[in-house]
Image (cartoon, rainbow, N blue to C red; front, side, top):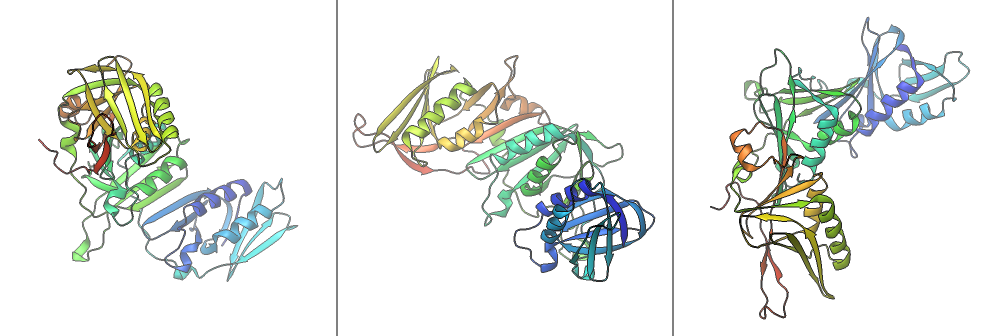
Length: 424
């Protein structure tokens, strides 16, 4: 295999695929980068995989006289490219036998690393899914950030480390949860002309995060969702999702798990709604967290018609803060949250957040208030579930009162989790 490529482009693509390598490869060969050039093409493909997710980068090349494939250890290749002389525009790449050589066109500098047997690389790798539609890269990145705020990270509960993805008309909607919070995010999608609407699928969050970081400057991201039944009862999951931007793609197997049904939580009518400015509440909450200096100390939110009281308790005393708020439908309402969970949620809202309050022990629905004063609230979602918007569910911390209510602060009682079906 021989070809000529841009030094900077080769180094950039090699660096990107290397970043997608698993920290602990299941097989030694998976620590390498598979580099391929097909017959009669001017493109070199760099591939890495962990058997679940495959990352590919495409590199334009010249004088691809000989097709072939080679597996090059990622770290030695990175060191080799970093040591090439500065100011070198193009490099010649030669893979012969067990060596991979990169040299300047005048052959003044030549460096070689040993390759790994290409026949040992797992095959076939998951094929790239046909395009379902395209999404704005900026909107996709924002959606993934919001979904990550509620996604689970516990490897012992793999179903909660994924996002439940569905397409309704021209909107792609995804839901994540870690049992104590949940996020539902809608993003506009431009469907491909002949693409069928895929079923509801569960996509791992890890490649979604990688795609959001990689493709944020790509303009638009092409997404392909292909839910294919396991052939002949083999039990192998061949369903997959491909995210493509510019010259790079990520293809991942879909998760074969049953995701919690949280739809009812997003559509329940709240008993009261309170609108709070995001900046003021975020600053107050940060001060409360710093003053209490206890990651496990809940913060109480006491909503009144014109203001919100924040109360937190520690062994050294208690902290009180006031924030402007507008509460409707009731006189006062008290609820308690994990302060860091609430702070994480607030970072994904912009100007004003609406608290949809049902009961002190029921999930609270946070929604964004638009500039015109409208919200992507539960009613609108129930009537038009395909509407774009951001909804965040937050499970409160149940509090039990001390023996002497006047002298003892309320104590955390239980940390309840979201249920598939909400309490009536």
